[in-house]
Image (tube, rainbow, N blue to C red):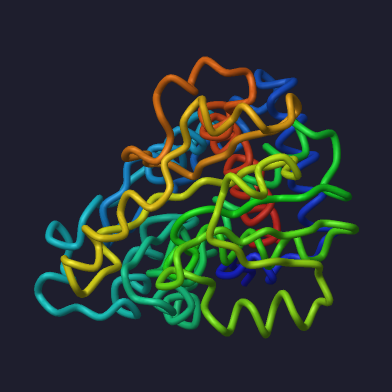
Amino acid sequence: MRHLIDIRDLTQAEIVSLLDLADDIMARREDYREVCRYKKLATLFFEPSTRTRLSFEAAMMELGGKVLGFSEAASSSASKGESVADTVRVVGCYADIIAMRHPKEGAPLAAALHSTVPIINAGDGGHNHPTQTLTDLLTIRREKGSLDGFTIGLCGDLKFGRTVHSLIAALTRCEGVRFVCISPEELRLPGYVRQDVLERSGASFAEVRDLAEVMPELDVLYMTRVQRERFFNEEDYLRLKDSYILTPAKLESAKSSLSILHPLPRVNEIDTAIDSDPRACYFRQALNGKFVRMALILKLLEEAEK
């Protein structure tokens, strides 16, 4: 049984194949309308989500399939003490594929060890978010024309930001990508990402605190929010939450070809005045997420049926 728990579960060739399939779905949507007829996706979201959950649901429905599931732990048997292993064993009796989000790192992996159907990690704590990474890669490729040879600035919460961790893991496989990590000291990349991913891959990277000083050299700017739900101390959150706010003034030194990405939801880290700037890609990025999840569902179901 094939699952997607970590972006590194996919080879580079498989990632490119998924992006190619997503592009084809976007170009020929009618050809994919019924390919998952009679198939069911279960969305097991033990943590709140809007975009990711609805994106998965929209993806399955546009493939002609059905959706069942829950959107918070309180509405599941987890509130009664049921284990993740038992939940997926039971849900696998009703669905052909499962998308799971969980606040605890490693929960989707534990689920995959007991599941009889493919498990897709839709985010586990501060660890991984592989389908967001596929979304980001598709967006970068569509905006820049390639996944090679550019400088990306990763700005904001790099300590708890699972989308950042997964994206770094994916882009270190590409040629000539330079990373600029922009954050306050308290929200720097965790050591395991810096050492085990960036340093081990030999990627070029820098860690800075000032967004303005590196803005002119960036080809892609990946903004993230400071996540209240990842903090144990409310005072620390309040002190750091507005560390980086992107405004039109801060973009004056940026390249005209800059692409601005954000995994969303946005709080106030990107001024709404930037939404009309052609360099703002985050709403196109959200749309891309639906198509790349359609591609992933198709691939995993296809492998499960072999």
